[in-house]
Image (cartoon, rainbow, N blue to C red):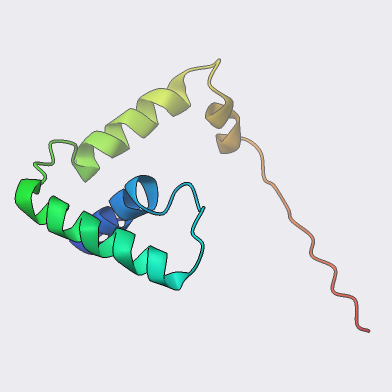
Length: 88
């Protein structure tokens, strides 16, 4: 899964602007978003990714091979989820 630039930006907004959710009204949300945007434009820099898909695949393999890692059990077990729909 890849966030891309917009996903990263919105995750920053969620953490730094929208949390905690203590706004009196939508006007206050707008003011805080616009103030953050002005401040962020002054300091924003491109992200330099160093962790590749290959790195992730290797890490996942190492973790799955560890006997004490909970995810290692997923290789040998099949999980079934049953969903019951009730009509009203």
